Length: 297
Length: 273
Ligand SMILES: Nc1ncnc2c1ncn2[C@@H]1O[C@H](COP(=O)(O)OP(=O)(O)O)[C@@H](O)[C@H]1O
Ligand SMILES: [Mg+2]
Image 1 (cartoon, rainbow over the protein chains, first blue to last red):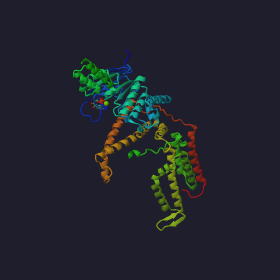
Image 2: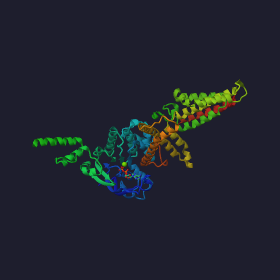
Image 3: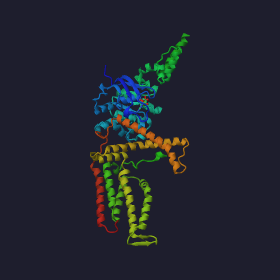
Image 4: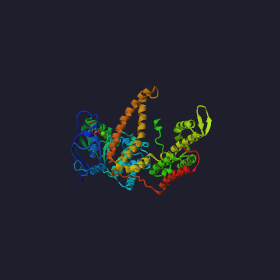
């Protein structure tokens, strides 16, 4: 089997020392309590979990913004918790595991779109002609070429978020982590960004870790991870995970409305599958079920 | 509302001056200011005025914009002119108004000072601020000052700070607008009462603004780290500034202008300041 892109073993973490936010009282509780998981190259993984469950913390550990309290993280087979890691190794991990955040306003640095996209490659010391190529390529990949000379504050939320994505693509990452990157957008912006993410995953083979509260987005993934209280509680395909409606409820999550409807019907004794994800699929199943019942009566 | 505030005075265009290298423009504007201060008599002032008018024409910036730029100076201009006309002591008396005496030299001096102030403002803004985008200006400054890095002046950091400030000013203005509206909706009154009451009414606007600015700063710092930011060392730039022969013409023209001013000063007669 191929080596996983990201491999996490018994990862624990608590905010202490300089990482600790000022004004947080008491001693530092463990935010992550022994997480182990593998992410295959090219996969599209969604991470679900209620607020404060440790999703962002996990993301920041993966690209070395934070350092684990204990446990190991391997990126492309390399142990990044090894004390022998040099600063250059660290920047190589950050290049390889890009991150897009929630607030589109707070991650753009420059006053011109293309200058902002160039920011990452510039930091990496890429030669100017090569940066130019990468910037043009990245803007084309997110469909923002015509806005190259605009200033970020003239753009909509979805457009800003696509610029932020372009800024990461220009660093040629293996994986992009989206930390609730669709949460602040309107439905239109959400659609734009989700389409961009899916295209990157399918066409460029970029591994995607998508943190979200939106269940419909989660149904698009190959795999869904559910984190609660710093522990990995569910891991499987969207179908498998969403069929555990009760389990999801206890960790404070909703399931897509269709899935909930079918699981309620099952509980009432109807002979229907409990893992329906899309509305079309649900409508089909229901109409077929009703027709069959008519015949048998 | 607040959003209407235009930032900087950059006036986009594609004139000869717009296309000049920002580093040359920064040096040229300094030289220009020196040249204006070198002017001593009527003829050299006449010369610098013509030169400035030529710059304005070259920049293709509408006269309206230029005049609007001078307007804030009107008060100072009138005040210094009146002051100089009435209180300058000279030899050739023009009028004796009992309380004050007006001399020919006073009138000349007032006139030349007014010309100097207007030239300084119009010329330097046409060479620099009107025709250079803020980002080019920061880039130019960073590269011009980069030799100072050797003596540990944090040139890159200052340029980065300027860039981020320019990036976030519109965002923060928008935010201020939102907070003001939110506080107004809760019945806070910003536009009446005395100075102290109004200052007090500002507190519920400033505090949320600061809190949010700090959160933004924190988010941005993490985002920059994720994009491998590590200061100016080893960093390359996408847009390279290269000096072409044409970029030197600007500098030489301003230098020649300064030289001409000195020569005119020496060889022309009349009142000199
Ligand atoms: N800088 C910090 N200092 C102290 N505690 C923190 C800090 N950041 C997050 N936490 C705590 O860690 C827990 C997990 O936070 P986070 O990873 O942001 O959760 P999520 O992204 O899933 O909402 C929360 O209880 C939060 O209060
Ligand atoms: Mg979070």
